[in-house]
Image (cartoon, rainbow, N blue to C red; front, side, top):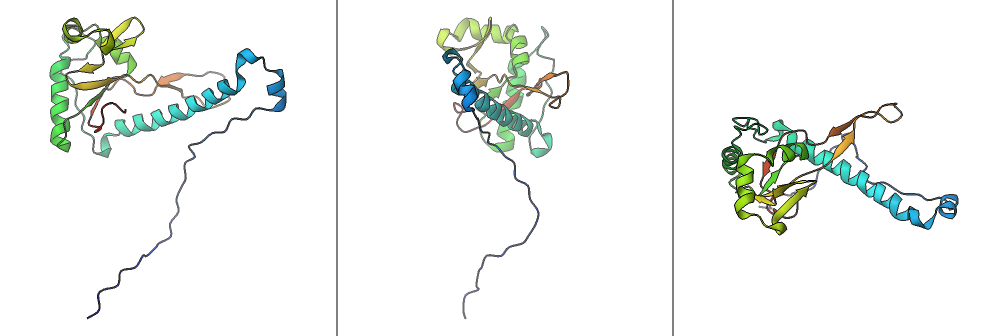
Length: 193
């Protein structure tokens, strides 16, 4: 008998499209009146790139915060800004959970900036810095430092802040994009986050 015919089918439904692009315009008047020290083209381009990167960071943070998206969550035994913090033990629990969920050994540790400046003073972290860190293996956070790798995880400290008020309102309130939750992830690359 003849083989069963396979063909493409289609259905119609509504959809949405998100725009992830910006354009920079410089009028002739702006170009003629701008001092060369302003580097008008570079400044406007940098602004557009920064806005695109911030929008991307907001989307990634939302994705990695969505507990209903199959992500496991865990609460540390103590908050990490107190002396009784057990960061190493809490990370071990998180790494084990990632491995149980995915079968992959996690490779990235995302620490929001406000958490990073708190944990740098904790004894667990100071011991790592004291015995294993040289100047090439640290993340500089102002006056504070963190190892670039903690317990086998590449450390990423995102700095994104966004204004949550609508355009045209008189007061603007910058908010942390990442909140105060850390993330332990398997990315498969470790270095390309």
